[in-house]
Length: 291
Image: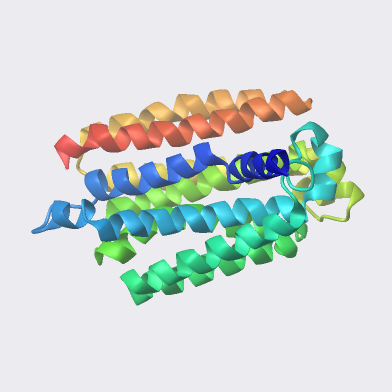
């Protein structure tokens, strides 16, 4: 019995994606410290117990989303990556569902205790994470857009809690949405075999691998145009240098995507998008002295 409980606990930690949760929490703190303009009591708010609980509740929503997604995708994952399936193997399905419910209700309760607006956002996020796993994941593009938006909402939550209206936070949130959208489509390409077998109408299933790649090119092009317009309007050369430095990286990314034809190629590209996200976090620190 003890061994079974230990397996469930380890399975819970794996299904929760602990490294991703740490990045989410770090993103919110870095956003608050480096992207939100200074104002009276700013650091008092950021270092408060309330901000910590806001970040923890956001992480709880994300963990619940990861778990419920693994719960519904168990059969698909057994085709795509059987060696990495956790729910149903290391983590019993009933406990996975229970963990999802407890994390979700706990996060929503904390949110309403801190600020009704935070609670409403948590309800919105948790519902669409569940609905994505249950239904939207199988609908062409819609599921990808939902996850991309929720990724950007992680940053916007800081503005909601602090009651601030910060253009740089919106810029970074938009950037996070674009990268998340690219990453989600890459995951769909990687998982096309299992998705096709279980009736998921993902972009690569409906339009083929070439169609999915074309969509990614369009997202990169749109993101590039957005960045250019941002760089023209902002009077900060360090910001300009940083984002201009990303253009050669995207060119290299496109080059690798053009010639990608194996699962490990797409896994490498997915890992690369995570590095871009991390570079964005580092850029927040570099930009602070100039804001």
